[in-house]
Length: 179
Ligand SMILES: Cc1cc2nc3c(=O)[nH]c(=O)nc-3n(C[C@H](O)[C@H](O)[C@H](O)COP(=O)(O)O)c2cc1C
Image (cartoon, rainbow, N blue to C red; front, side):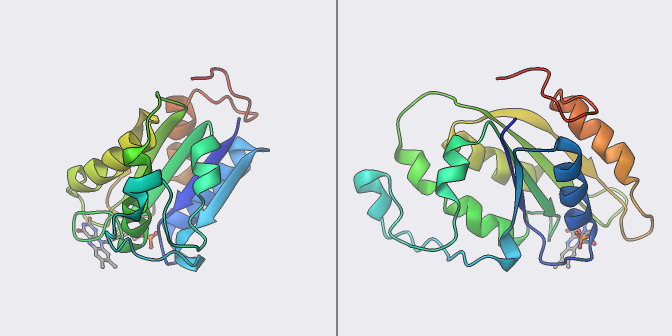
């Protein structure tokens, strides 16, 4: 398994970080987390440079190589005003070079969204994630939506079970299936 987790929270003490760290531990070798909040990733300016050759003009920490090559990309974000965090959204916008790229679906993608309300509105964040992953040409494998963190502590083990089962990864972190 070759998995890239993009962690879209700026809070190292929060649940999104905890879920990403635990997931990397459970998925084992070949899994890498990029903490986007601690990375130097600039805003897409819409300059159109990537339309010419599919390459972004910005030179920073945006992990283009790993995004293209990873079998599995997992996007994780806290819900912020019904959408992805601006930290994750900035990186989703930077997927624009892939929008112009040709090629077929390679690998798969998955989303984790963590909201504080009892009944959060997840659909906007999911739409942003799925749209970015469509540009990346990764097959969407589903999502894990975690509500109610304002009043309860989410059960990270239960979250792990759902994510690993959706991704068909067994308990030892061995991939049971490849896209
Ligand atoms: C700026 C901001 C906006 C938020 N907007 C929402 C929201 O629209 N819906 C919701 O359910 N929770 C919202 N929350 C709560 C967070 O999603 C929740 O606290 C989450 O657990 C934060 O992630 P973390 O635990 O990784 O820090 C918001 C929090 C912040 C800081």
